[in-house]
Length: 200
Image (cartoon, rainbow, N blue to C red; front, side, top):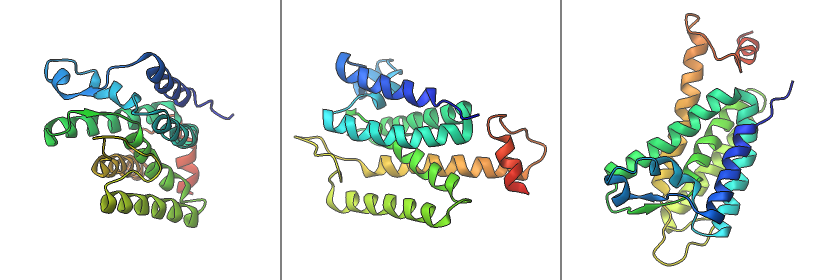
């Protein structure tokens, strides 16, 4: 039975709602004063309608695939891990970043996770996906500008958070592979059958 990617739809809808009615952005002074929920909600906010469209489009495509393949629980874990890892890094490692918005770091995690999920079926597709991501990251690092989304004023792209998000995606892959190698650990029911098939 095909799983309905309801968590992907909920997060995408929350991002759209945040654009229309507002949501607590990642705001360093506010977080320092105890508003720690902004570490998560800030990823739902965006700088412009174009920024929102690109982020949500990529999120829905990658999220639908990953959630159907790995189940709601694993998907939620990767989302939360990416959001908190990036936000905590920004707070403690980049004090100059006062405000941050966007799903792009989470998208980066899903991009790399999806690349490895698809690799047993199509190594060439997985390689292409990773090459595209690496190329995008290199362009951002060399130009200091977002590849698809024009950012106005003092707003600038942070390639490092995309790399950090991708690292979370790689960690998700490493965790799955470690679980598969260790028969003493139970796999989440959502993707245990797939892991068993891969082992054969």
